[in-house]
Image (cartoon, rainbow, N blue to C red; front, top):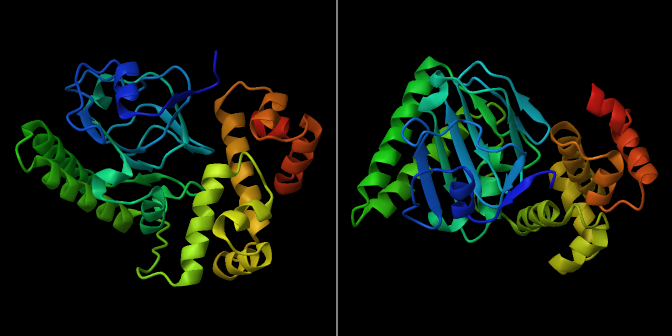
Length: 296
């Protein structure tokens, strides 16, 4: 049995979650948990989407985990989850949790040429940051209204529904950025160094499990490793290698928290030569062994 599920296409998620509906668009889908009889935790295993997911929970009754971040039941919350983040939920949903919404979409739905545009326009999509926003009563009401408007237009499916839904989605993303507690908005009109840094960060997200050699990333960007490291240090305050190591550490923590993989299997997943090398890497960056972190 795999340690976690992968959903490459939106239709794969719909089928596995046993939702009694068909998506109207291949690159966008929204469902109301109550209307679609969704149980709030569709998967026994942790899962990873290859597209974006937005989740609105006005009455959360389950603990949600996204990578190493844990969100206990309680306050209303809104999640903006970028591709490949590991997700799972613990606990049994109650009837009160049934009025939430889930949106699944690919970047091409909102005319984004790649994931990297969304990654830097909206900080919650950065895979090294928390994807969750806690909402007060007024914010919950406002967000609920917007989700209902999106669902209504999606169900209407008229000649202009796709464009209207696209604009509603952009409004939702902008509202999320406004509410995000750790907002770190990047200015539009990137200079060349910012473009290189953004491309590097996207490459790290795609390849950190395969290599921690800065030269590999520099080759893909057609610049020297020294130049790349200088740019990354200037913009982020970290060296390029530190950024790569943080991405690898982040994923290791996610696997330790959400799966039953052995330490050796996690070392293999991250392409370490052996378990001992992985353990030394983990302790050097955290001060704890992988086992100590898992049991804490």
